[in-house]
Image 1 (tube, helix red, strand yellow):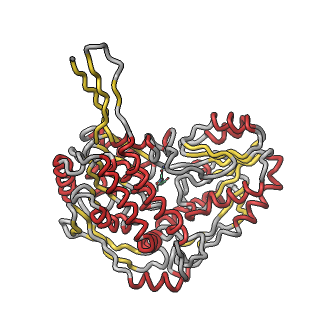
Image 2: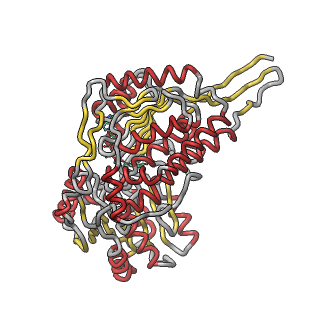
Image 3: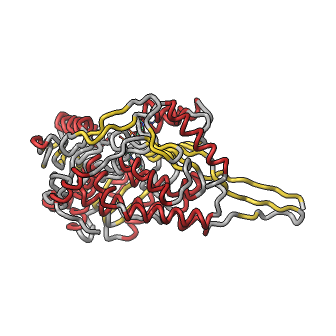
Length: 497
Ligand code: NAD
């Protein structure tokens, strides 16, 4: 994929026509109450467009359409081989429109255009295509019955799925849900974050072009406490899938209990430990990786390596390498292809990150680099990549998810201590271990209470690996064939022969 110059991207941004309406039943539509909110770019604070602010009335309308479409069988009973073809076309259309989608993503949430092009759009397309490819290769089961019985164990789509997603990888998180949800035959209502709704709105049209029947895929932009809550409390939504904060994840479990006990699958927060043992074979690689693990996507990553656990004996040698590596991560205009750290998603998030930096100072952690807002003259929301040393795992900056480029360095003396510190968190999303000792790598990986563990690398994996959390990082898994479990009900049909 080509990545043109800053000037070209700026010209494209000027020329871009941005759709901000909801998408229900195959058409773009205003919110019933005609409410909208301003969609601002964190790059420079400019107004991008007005976006429909949907309400409970819109949720009712979308659920009704989704239910009717599901019941009609037009998609839910389509042969898997045909659904596969449509999903592959959908993926291809994302790729064909990669420049526009990448630009929307970058303008909307501030991430570098190079990342939107190289990571977000291709991985979103891959999630759709991979799930579609799989759907006609999955078999159901026949139980081991007595001779006069036939026991069929089958999977069927759950019905109406509501997907509520966050702003950090808006398109990719949506497609991690859409891929398996649509491939298995469900009707879906996607509620993007109010901070980054634009790509979700755009791909609704691409879904129709791909051949997904009208009403199967609907998009309701709006706030969490309005349309998000209405979907979560809706009596006719069968399954709610979510990526976002642990705080809201807990709330969704309550909404489910207060309504129809809809299935709730949660991908929530993280505070992931990146453990570097003294016997790591390649400290340079570990240092570069540690810098990337906190600076990539401005640290707005659920699996950000936000706690760097370093064995005391190598600390004086290792930290200078990390500091040197972090110099390569500099905030800049996200539309410049050379930029690798963009703007934080909005002023609120920037202030949250700055207040955590303040708390690090107040708790006695030692600032090694960064710590300030930067590029203020642009009108955008940029924060310098920041490292604190001398952090104890009890400090707020080590316990709470900051969701910004702020790294806490914690020192340990033994394997046991490293494991105890790593697991001393309410979260359990991811962890990494650096060592040349294969037994130590396995034993540590086994002891870590996390859904993903990486050895001698950070953030490995692709569509073939399940992704999700232990503990308060959530339940269920995105990606891989395991994701299909969330979107299907299991049925036992017992036949007397
Ligand atoms: P958030 O929880 O504030 O919002 C997520 C979504 O929930 C948004 O669409 C929001 O509008 C909606 N929402 C908010 N209140 C709601 C309510 N009462 N009812 C229904 N919906 C509601 O999270 P965020 O700030 O958008 O995203 C950051 C969080 O997402 C971080 O905690 C991060 O770790 C997490 N995240 C997790 C993963 C993962 O796979 N585990 C991936 C990316 C992000």
